[in-house]
Length: 241
Ligand SMILES: [Zn+2]
Ligand SMILES: [Zn+2]
Image (cartoon, rainbow, N blue to C red; front, side):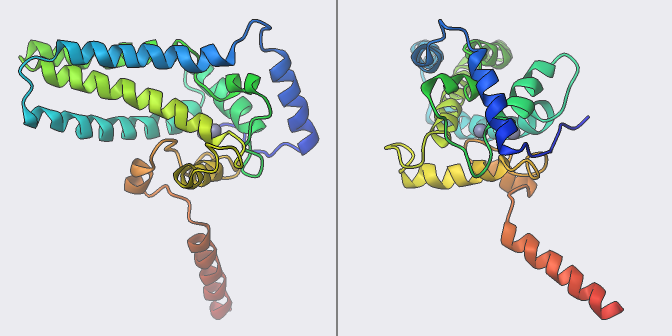
């Protein structure tokens, strides 16, 4: 079942935002939410590096390969779990479509206080869940005598999740902030901001980090091309009359 695509009137959006912020526990620490999962991720990366033995150059090929697999996974999880109610995974949809997407829209992407980190970042335990999801790789590859490949996969997965979080947060910082002003962040933010249009979020721009898999699957929204096609369609219909 697909989620709601209606755009909330500004007043209702402000009201929802106030309710969600009010529901954040007083003890919530935005700094902890940002730094603690990143430290766990970096710790696992260091741990993986320490277990590497007799690393050969070809094995480093696992890093770009894993990155592409993870980019495709990010695309699919975003499309199928964050934007559709899936039995057993409904909590992912609930945080994303009716909350994150209803509060932040293309024209109003910026957080208004650091407490709103809670509306952008995945829960702190997300990094542990990602580690658990990546764990079969080192186990299976280790059993096949390729522990280095498994460790490199796990390290890349952790770097990917940490990078995803920092990038996503930076898109939701004010565009005139120090991070928001960076050219690369501006380009990536435009891609993600288009996805935050309630009319487009179910179909376009699912990659939040780098839109490689959006490119492969043809889900990069190009407004000019679509306008041209619509106009051509209208003209075509006009000629038939
Ligand atoms: Zn977002
Ligand atoms: Zn989304």
